[in-house]
Length: 113
Length: 112
Image (spheres, each protein chain N blue to C red):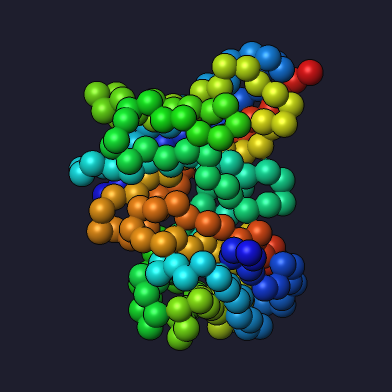
């Protein structure tokens, strides 16, 4: 069975500071991993995805994530937070043949001026 | 390109009433999904479909039914609404297994 754990339901950072959102996964087979962002009253948009091609994945809006198999982690980072990054972020896992995505509980990012 | 469109966007139901949520996608995607989003619980999969005429249960299927008579449409039905079904419902679609999922804007349902 697959699962995703996101540590920290709320994270606050100052504008210009490093953003680090944590995601750990559990999967008995090689996973595909995703980060999605949800702005208020909107659906989810894909930020980036890991498909086993490269362990460091770059996404939109300056975000990136690194797949670490030994730590079963896929943390999301951005060097410098912007006010427009305030949103809720979801990590998700999918594996071959399951035909579905399992989401974490989300992390709400607040950016302080 | 509309992407994934959900109808309606808001609805208030009385306990015991029934309703159908419609999801339409214009990207010729094979896979479609219904999720519900509740505070602190993330998105939980209700039902999904891997092609026209197919459906399967997700994590929280009780109290819901689905149909996929046409490839572009995925309907979610509530036969007898309960307050516990108050939630935001999202439809999503993807081209193939493990591809990017595209989401609709959501339906906010309140059952009183």
